[in-house]
Image (cartoon, rainbow, N blue to C red; front, side):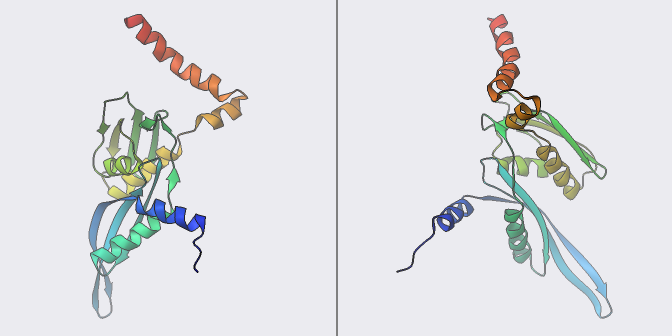
Length: 188
């Protein structure tokens, strides 16, 4: 009888639940001695909708093969992003790659995903429900994706902040939300 390992079962379950978004497909040519070699390049975003997301680019002679290869690479390169209340990023962040500059801002509940192009695909695959983002400079999909991932990597979880400051996590979270509670109390 064949035994199935628990780790294999968990890995298969997580791979079935991944969201795959195709950002761009381009036809690329390489000039060689005998003529031109035409191939396709695909940029793919993969996420689980629960705080993990990855991206990759791959080339192949056919579009479906390029998309499949990029998806497999993206699954291996997934990063964890710590979300607040499972719906928005913990704090504002920005990053720059090449000529592209990206700004990400956390947003209150009900705002929705205010982003365009490849940034929207990243946030949907990540599982973010409320965020405001702006891309300035280059409109190149690859640079925008790289800059967005750099900004997401810059989001520091409260556990690391507490360790750095030598405080408890509850102290940090209470301080973060204390200003918001006071504002809502004054409005009533």
